[in-house]
Image (cartoon, rainbow, N blue to C red):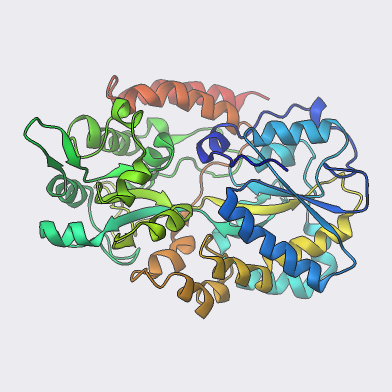
Length: 441
């Protein structure tokens, strides 16, 4: 088991280095050849502790099934590639919404529809309790390749004390109560402070997520999905005028309005630390930041939806990204029945209740989302519906086996736009390059 925590940025950027040759083989467990069920996941130390609670409770209820947790280090997909190439693909593995399609396409993941057909009572209950967009995220090419286990969508954290001190109204408290891009930038401007030399002493807004995904999230809130359809798209909407408009707005927050650190400033600072220390009024991030902010001494914070852009159709609400992880079974596993029992438990009511009480994850079953355990774990949050309703107000990013190639192109072409070196209209070139990749066999 590796001790280094994984980097979320590295995970999102490295979501597809597996080759066809490396994924051939029958699994015997990625850690040893004994009779243990191997469970491969990525986690920082706090997340690992929460997962071990799920594993521990499962083994208490299923003493005949031994589970060996295998925690990934950096290079998650490369690590999986190594395991599978050596004939030791893990029995159960964490799956990510942006990367699982490549694994499914290459035959690494088991289609769970066979098990669901055998256990129709469980299948019916799970489907009824699940948030539709999250559950459907892992449906690909007529197969169901994972069950969602947590929601990792993004939203805004905001410092209530800084808002009050500046006399700025707080953001909306629910996803269906919108505020505009203009209102957002006005608030961020009022909440930005500088010293006599012009150096910022307090930022109005910071981003704690991957920049080009955050820019795309602003585009989603300007009425433009990343692609249509979501699964196996042939075109991404980088060239849509409303998409480019939103990306330009996001870039201008730092390069024109100066309410957020620019690309060079971010290199020498930690944006989560800026918010935790009260030096930023708003921060875009996911629930994985909650533990850090909760531990910050004297930080009075809450959560809010993102603002919506001028091109969002009238009557539409703000949205988050789906950003979910799931649990999948290796097609080559020799312990499929045991793996099924574990996945069923972790994605079911008991496992989800443990996740809810941990305060590290947002569960994905409706009854657990609204449970006393989840509310108690988030007693610092007044705007709890931002979390409990967030999964239902989420939209997905494209699901395609070519996503890693798309990411490489985004890295190349969106960076200059976000740094202010090029206008967002240059994304038409990115759109053409991505279409070529999506059109390749």
